Amino acid sequence: MFFRCTTLAAVAVTGLLAAAPAVASPPSAGSSGSSQVADPVGAVTVDKWADHTVYRPAELGTTRHPVVLWGNGTGAGPGVYADTLLKPWAAAGFIVVAANTTMANSGAEMLAGGRELLRRNDTPGNAYTGKVATDQVAAAGHSQGGAGAVNAGADAMVRTVLALQPGPLAAPGKMVGPALFLAGEADRIVDADGIVMPLFEKADQVPAIFAELGGAGHLVWGRYAEVMADWLKYQLLGDTVAKARFLGAECGLCTDVAWTRVLHNAKAQALS
Image (cartoon, rainbow, N blue to C red; front, top):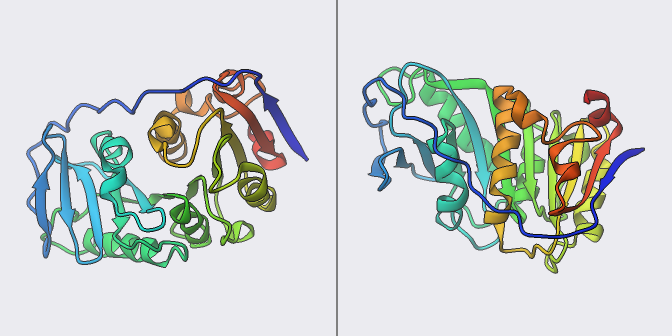
């Protein structure tokens, strides 16, 4: 059984996650075995690992940071998503580990990046030592990478899944944490009803939400940026303002005319 909220109009949703203030403590040293390229605005550092690109706060400070494991769409690299999704998340305090693969469907490369980050967290003398919130890990991705995020969500390391227009080759019934499935009303590559909805329906063992953005095609991930950021803040940081966007009959998504359909499964409805 699903709890359903629907809106009648479809208009564009805009806005990116605003950068959070930089951590006040001095910047950490560069991570062992990686090269760094500073983001032009100075809030983000990009670490190049052998198989992953890491977007992180330039100043990690003394706190532990939540983690996003990112999977790209078919044929794409992390740079395609960097300016609209990955760098803003890093500027807000997340460590984003993006698999360099252009075929992210299995989720294996995403999980490998997470394990490498956890290894560095436990290894003295690098930028990530003691800086990783090991119990606050999300798997997120677009298209094939969205399916990869769902598949990675079967691993106990992953606390929540964020699947943007996920492909069909995924096993949502194996996920161990809450999931948000985002679809586009005008997506002709990953059809909302034919592909995304069935994945959502199979995720009945965890709290799951399906949300369809009105008029959105497949290559407009920037239009989802604000909602995706709020899901991460809600799930990994316990942000109550962000939480209100997703839960309850009067949730932010439910009352936002930009979203043509919002569905909650029984477990998600029970959280409201």
